[in-house]
Image 1: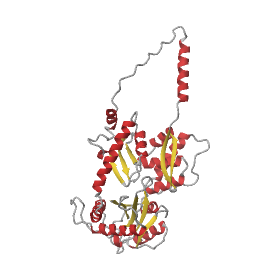
Image 2 (image 1 turned 135 degrees about the vertical axis):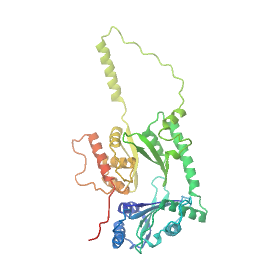
Image 3 (image 1 turned 180 degrees about the vertical axis):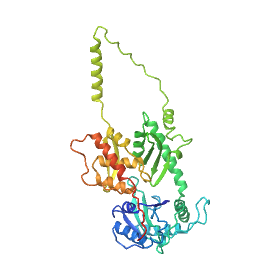
Image 4 (image 1 turned 120 degrees about the vertical axis):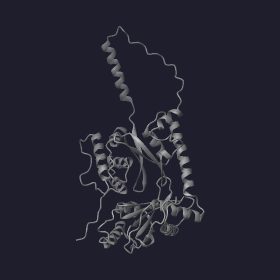
Length: 410
């Protein structure tokens, strides 16, 4: 079992994502009215916050919610009913409220959280590719008594709570699982590099995703890949953690590919015949140009493919690679956004293919809050590449995080 937690300021968007507009199984609702729609639960949280806004008027709370993800392994949760998940949720919350130090012991005497006495709900998700079940909790930062839940080192505290529960149930320690995952991802990375006839970030990413991973590339302003991470289940692993000697880092991965593909002995190639000197030079050049244009016209066009979860179903969508490159080159990650370059690129691709609702929902899950507006769509005579550029710009805007600040009461 593993667990993650962090304070967030986009509680409304996270409520939509966690409940999937109430298509997810609601495991537990704590100090909230039962059977409310997602926004009804969020409205109750906001109403509770507003009761105490004067108390925090001098120092408003920007990050008003706590996002928690808890994921037992398939073996650990095999056969669980919703009641079992509810009891597990309560066990984790109780354990988290008891943690007062980080697992490494460097930070002690931390103020305890009071999540048990706070508004929260827990929703059960299933990973689209692996099928691994996991919980999403959205917690109000202000408890029932009007005190703020301390979030210092909340991520490390969630890890400590998970370790305590693993020990209690004799489950595998998360570090053991992490090491197993690192070994498996590393083996897959090397296997993919061996199979690639030439190194390409697009092919490398596509092959990893075909094996069930999620890959995020971090690019600089010149669109050069400077880092990447590979996600397996609910855990993300940086390139620097993979392999040995940092050989899978962007700065070394092409060198690693070359070492896996030693140069073979060149084959004998018949020398081309010289041009007929008696034939006019203009005719020879014309023949060369015609052959070149024919080769270009017969070259197959390539498409970029990506699997998306749309309305609960997996769909494999594709766009021309030239359009994908236009989208990719026009993505700009907004400041303070939870979305990465690759996340926004997926939103742009959905817009390009006219999956507007799916693109909006995806942008909301990253903390964005912009609506698509009326009149959106491809113009009748619009060039495909210009349409791709507009989709990228709209995706940048959709993923821009909402800024919410409490105003001083009048």
